[in-house]
Image (cartoon, rainbow over all chains, first blue to last red; front, side):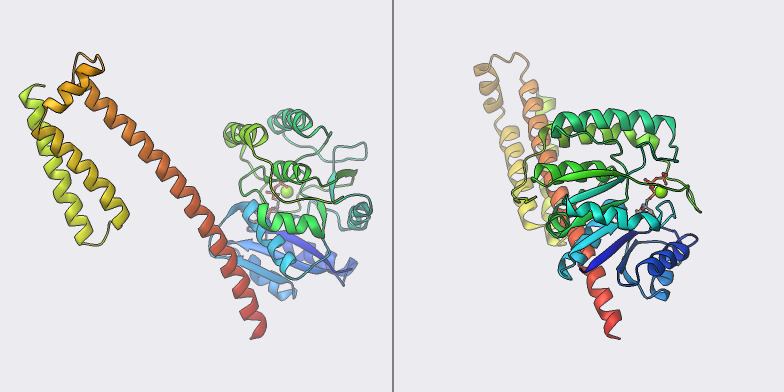
Length: 233
Length: 114
Ligand SMILES: Nc1nc2c(ncn2[C@@H]2O[C@H](COP(=O)(O)OP(=O)(O)OP(=O)(O)O)[C@@H](O)[C@H]2O)c(=O)[nH]1
Ligand SMILES: [Mg+2]
């Protein structure tokens, strides 16, 4: 089955080599698509050195925009399943098969770090924000998710198709993406996975923007229209 | 309406008119916007030439202080315009994003061929 790893990378030159090396070693048959939008530290050169597909955009579109491009590429190349993998070394390549095996029973699989087997801690305000979000998502989708912001995810072909057009472009895209998939009738499932600490670089600190994104997400949840695309589980 | 308001509106209308014509001539203003602004300019000009229109309308609407009507109309118009610009901006942003994606895809294809 044609499988691709979508790796969004923004100034991750430090950790990217190890990440790419590990994926390649474990899954030489996987196509690795690095999406770089405006990194200034040679991130895209590293991706090319490793022989990965490197999509680079002239300026920063944010992680949502980067992912949508990744999905678009996969869709054009008729990739049958794809998984999202962070470039900062937080995701564990040994967990990829586990994630992909989840696709047998679902259209989209989220590798969750909040189930019993977790070893990862996040900041307090983000924790509060996340628990509120979980509640809202449960309210609007009727499903329970424990780790809505996890960027360790796998998608089947129909979901790749949907996201190549409809992937949310703003911060908290991870949450909105779940909503879009569920609203389109796809079966989204969570499985517990192991994650690591960042291996290099700065963790994202956008807490001060949380309120704005919260309001935006509220609007998305309650006002957002049902999309036209039909899903099949 | 007092004569000083009258003069102020006339000056504004005239200024706006010259500005619009100049901008269109310099080709920095798209035709569709020039039409919009010229309409506004003409409206202003008419109202300042025949202030009785405003007085009459204000009376019909039970507005005692006539310039209020003028302000009301102005604010309403600006709100609509802002909404229109928000719409155009969103659309433009979408288009730019799609373009940027397309560029990245093309660049990748090109580099692979070389
Ligand atoms: N292309 C691209 N990738 C990005 C952008 N922002 C973040 N990323 C990548 O997305 C992945 C996750 O980003 P992080 O900042 O680690 O986000 P996170 O893991 O949710 O948050 P932390 O717990 O703080 O690490 C990393 O591989 C980043 O390089 C961006 O603007 N463009
Ligand atoms: Mg991270």
